[in-house]
Length: 136
Image (cartoon, rainbow, N blue to C red; front, side):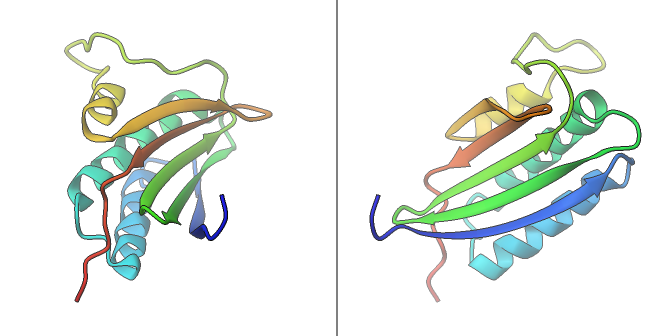
């Protein structure tokens, strides 16, 4: 595509419990910088779920995960990626009493989501096609 502008912010988080709220705070600040208040609650919830999944299932001890936020124009299209070094391919499944709701929520809230390859590990991503910058 020609004439496509992409803004990118990324951060690395260690394998520790407080990384999920830190990832959410990072995202909140980037969304404010980009003037992205439309669907911000949905975006923040998806970041929380993807970061939690990386923390619980994708990050071996002593490692961490990366969060990439990209705003592509024209569109705009907001893309969230969580890069981890764990094995396996995440999928939506029936939730139990204790877990299994994360990707179900991402699937319901985001316009698209999926899993990409990374060596080692994987990239779990979601996109918000209708997240338009506020004018003001």
